[in-house]
Image (cartoon, rainbow, N blue to C red):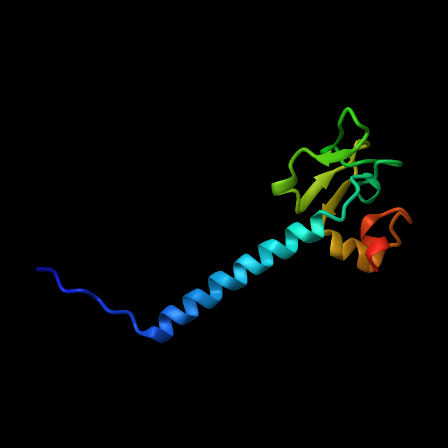
Length: 105
């Protein structure tokens, strides 16, 4: 009969805490993302948009590479830029006044 390996309760507690933390972070991200009206403003929709910015049939914008958007990207005119999380955009730039993130403040 194989021996059972008993994990110390402190180790299990730390694992549980980490999983709860990760779940809380994921929920916070979903809540934050739900504020977006998909106007495309922060992605340059009205000027020189990101090559990955697309518009759906209802006129709302979305990123074609959303899950891999952070990092080096190019605009339609070929300019390079670094895509950053929206919280960074809001920290350094004035967004569209209709932006859902602005209205929350």
